[in-house]
Length: 352
Image (cartoon, rainbow, N blue to C red):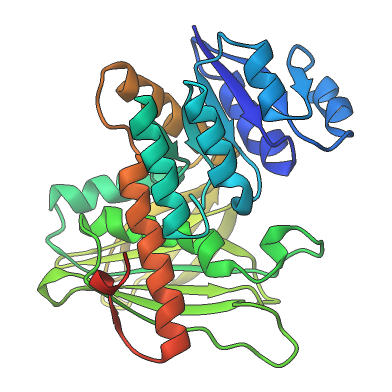
């Protein structure tokens, strides 16, 4: 039995982490920690068997059998809490973004090395069925070489005072977007070019236009738009290969499309029905669905991702989302911010 402690008992814990861990065979969620005094009442409803502490220190002292600590707190606390857990001899799974700076990432990795423990990051998007199947198809080469890729998101940040509403769009969701492009191309980019326009009166980087440059003249493009009053699109993907395009769209889809085929000029009827989103292959006007997500998409993907982390570490292998690889994602995000600030293309070699 793998025993887990959860630090940070807010929205992510309730909607993602507790449902994800509860479904994993051979995993027990033993205890949680959060300084918010209302956390005890929330957890009594969500996870009544879980002990709740106000500090990680008390959790570690009272539950010495815990193997893994999951950190689901705001990013500026990640380094302190991860190092504390590692020094206490526990493995760590950290929510993204790994840490706000490379210096803090390196402190975490150094602590993991000293303790002989593993640290991994919850880059769960590649575990979603629609993304996993798209990445598998790209890696197989069945549609030819990947030439260009796009990741985009359009939504409006909900009101509130949390860290996600303080203008950190590229550091927050951009982490997922960068990870998906790195996974698709199978390498980190050589350079980054970014623009982050900011309308008057708006805080931070609500709009991010970022291009990553890969080998062989290939590129990936990220569009993050947190000012969109139109349709909410949490994650949209396009992988353009030599022979076909792979598309994925996260979120519920229910539509009927009636039209004419562009080539044959024959009538066409298309039905889309997917509770958590779907992926498909496009060749001109022809399309074939290749995967669908379950409705509880993020919790399901997190569960699969963490299960693989536990399994790989149990075998003595490097897990998905390993700290070493997650460091490269932070480098790319920091290169994007530097590029936008300096108005130039930034080689990744400059960011270390």
